[in-house]
Length: 301
Image 1 (spheres, helix red, strand yellow):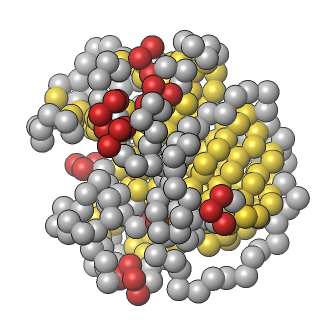
Image 2: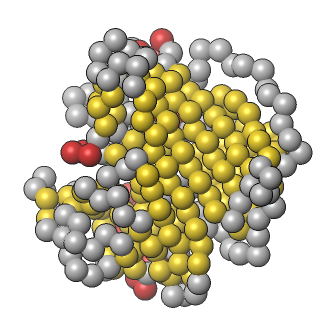
C-alpha cells in the first residue's frame, strides 16, 4: 500500500546513497564510521547491518522475493498495526500492512560521533483506511547506523478515538547453527507457545535453546535479550524500550520447507529475537497520543 503522494527526495549526506536494489526496488545504502547498512523503502526494511571489522549481523533468505507486492524475508520487517493473522479479517495480510507499504524517505543526518540516522515515514491512505485497521495515523522510523544498530518506531494516533496497535521489529539474526545457539535474558518470563495453545506457560530458569520449531511470545518483559553464537564466537544483545514482549522464532525443518520465500535448508542459519508490543502487551493510544518503541543491537565477544 504505497503512500498517496511521493515527496521529493531530500538532500542526503555523502554517507547515504539512494539507489536501485534487487527487483528494481529503491534502496538506501548507509556508510557510517563504524558500520554499514542497507534499507529498502519497501517496508522500511533493513536488510543488512555490518559493524566495521565484523561480520553481517542480520540474516536474509536467498529465496526472498523482491517485489512491490510481497514482504521481504529476513532482515528487520516492521509488523504494524497488527501481529500475525488479523483477529477478524482472514483476508488481511499477516503482520499488518506496514511491511508491504512504500515508506517515504524523510531525511538523513550525520552525527558528530560518526553514526548516521536515516528517517522514513508512513501515513494513512485511502487504502489503509479501507483496510482491516481503518484509523488515521503517522509513523516515523529512525534507523541509526554505527557500531550499534538502533531502530526506533514511533506512531501517532491522529484519529478521534482510541486505537489499539500491535508492533514488532521482527529481527532475523545470523547464527552459525541455531542448534548450538542460545537466547538469554528471558529467564523467568512467562510466554505464549504459539505451537501449543492460548494459555501462558510459566517462565523457565534457563536460556532458550533450539531442538525443534520454536514460536514463543515472552510477556511482560522489558529486559534485553542476548543471542549467544558459539560457532561465530560472538553475542548479539538486543536492548529495548517501549516494548513489553519479545518473540523468539525459528521455523525448523517442516515450516521452512512450506514457505516459498525461505530455503528448505536455511533454517539452521537464523533465529528471530523480536522487539514487540503484541497480544496482552499491545498499546492503546488515546487520540493525539504517540508511542515509541526502540531496539538497540550490539555485537560482543
